[in-house]
Length: 286
Image (tube, one colour):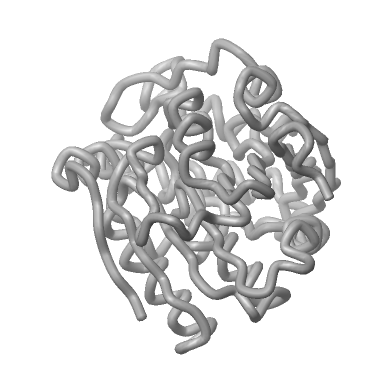
């Protein structure tokens, strides 16, 4: 069963469009997935829960729920939350294909902190947020999580940066090329420039009801090609096609040439660290 709900959907959809546009195909195809070790870590939090409920914030195209379904087939319900309506539609389709009829799915169009449980009283056992926490009102999100989550619930905030933040010769050259087209600041869709959060996620969690915190770090090695890098850029807030207007075709041509020069045997290497912050209410750990 799939249901859809939301808060001020028009405003939320506009917010999501401003950041990422409607490039759901590129997002689904070119965004890196969740490392297997991280998926197993998340799955372990649901051990002993007979019919788990998952709440995935900033779900994008549902990478986290799809990965979890492969190792926790007994998931009973998944709540998907995102401000981008097109991505939510893609996410629901992906989940229905991954587990047809195995669990119910609800899609909520809106900012994460405005989410309310549907139906009330069946709180999530696991709340996940992957590569999206920096876009949110983090204190308000954690207050919402405290209202809706089951007493034993875990909040998992995770991510590994992006090609903008990765420190390598080829990503540095690519970043400089983007800046020649769009200016020195990192763009945040059509909303302007990206502002780095004023405090760490660890501080956010420590100040929240979910202050019992553990950090887990998983090294990740990725092999990109010029084609997959360009596809990934189309899905980002800092290099989506609309930002370049009629210069996007020229940018992509230059980007492909630059990446071809830096690629070794057609491959561009990325060495990243996928970090998972696992947080619980004090005293709730089993």
